[in-house]
Image 1 (cartoon, rainbow over the protein chains, first blue to last red):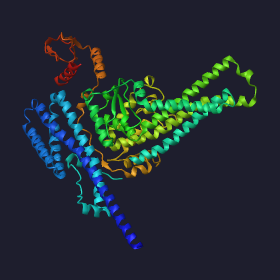
Image 2: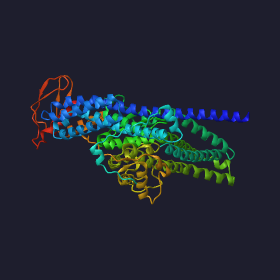
Image 3: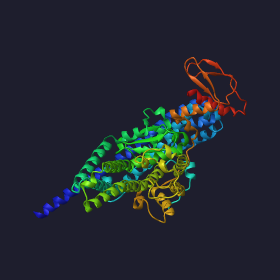
Image 4: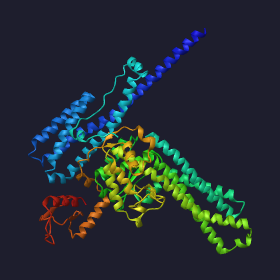
Length: 187
Length: 424
């Protein structure tokens, strides 16, 4: 009698624990999704701004066909990567786009009239800001991923993750030459 | 991050309690000066004054402070696109649920402050002088510092502490006036020749004089540590300590103590306008010395995190911690490279700056063409074209040749300034 009661209590306890862990994982997965949504919005905006920039600039930079082509190609790659939804692909495509944009800004330095164009300046400001927002949102996303992945790997939540089919999320790391050039020192 | 808020809350509660006690003492002194047995009534009156002021400032404190500073809200993004962008960036970096409201104060003196008792009602205000002088990275540093104040709930604390300080000042002021008045009427001496009452009266007067000073010390003491914490937060958000460091340098270099706001508002600014480039950390300062803040920021190596700020702080303060255990939890990120855009600052120039530039053009003997459509076109020195097209109605005007034939700047810069003048 009393043993069966104890057994029932244990089973109920286990079920409650399972529910708690499961809900915790769902919550963390949603946090990852929300953080990603923020990045997604900014990436979309970035891709929308670039054709405008190219259009504005064409009149000034008539001899820089390759630069425009590099940007247009990189942007197309980034757009299709975003449509695919794979974090790794997006990161790679955005890295390539960063490189193309940096090349463009370097070339634009040679066109003082372009730099004085208020339309160009405004677009450049919007692009810079959008890129900043991506990088700030990325930090938030990666923090959320770290928490979620840790929960997926550690006992006992990893058991629940296995049963519930929770897959680990991917970190969003844009590989970019200029950013890698900054040395990191840990204290 | 949450631990910063919690640690602040404990210290704030303590300080506000201390200020409340001081307020009670002033009330008691006031009461017992009027009548030896009326001390309790004095305390009650003081607390009622405090409560009314506190409720008022919590209900509409933001609006009052902003109005006092003469701030106007940026409603549309195109009024200050870069400022709006930067605030949004820092909102994302700090993880605020929504961007604070943005205000601009028409003042040539560069400064910034944040108000608001919670994230929902928060607002940041910057002066036109700040926008005109700082580049993008510097402005980002300043906004990050202000958003850190909001995130750390410093704005709420400063509202309460500032109000308490205000209540003490008002009561003490009232009391001192009352003494003068009654001394002039000289009714008291005949009323009372009791020794104990005389001592009590003297004590009360001393209290009334000292209380505001003490309250000020308390108020300022707690604002100093918060400045370091907000600087640390700004480093964490922007990942670019040099931006804030160079902004502080520029701001402190151009303060004008005579055109400054009240003592209550002073601790809320990024740099105290009352005490520009202070050399040392004194008991009487609202902010840590700007030199100290700058050298800490410049010592941070290549990792932008709370730990890095803590390490840099300890280097100059004999190993004394400022963040303590708070710094152990955050994630480290490398310091980023300076942002490539500097030219874009001109886009964000606010309306007041246009007027200022118009004045500068007048000083420079700029030629002025009044178009029939009502637009006044200011032609900057160095513009050598024979005619100019009105940007509004498109009619072409002849331009008189420049009064002086100085060495004209190169064509690029002159066309740039011509463009800017067209917008005025």
